[in-house]
Length: 72
Image (cartoon, rainbow, N blue to C red; front, side, top):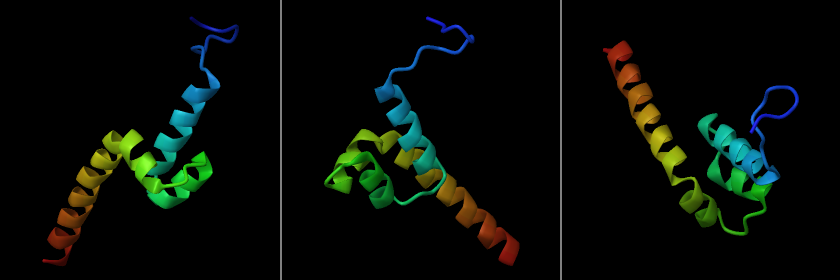
C-alpha cells in the first residue's frame, strides 16, 4: 500500500527496525543501539538483529584482509 507521496506504508515498529539496522550497519556498537531501543540487555538486540551482525562480521573480515594486503 502506498501513501499519498508514493512511499510504502510504514508502521512505527517498522521505522524502529530501520533505525536499529541502519545504526548497526554503520558500525554503532550493539550496547549503544540496545540503549536507544530501550533494551535492558544487549543480548536481546543481538538476537533480534543477528542477521545484521552477521553481515557486519563479513564486512569486518573484508576490511581486515584488505589491511593485510596493503601492508604487505
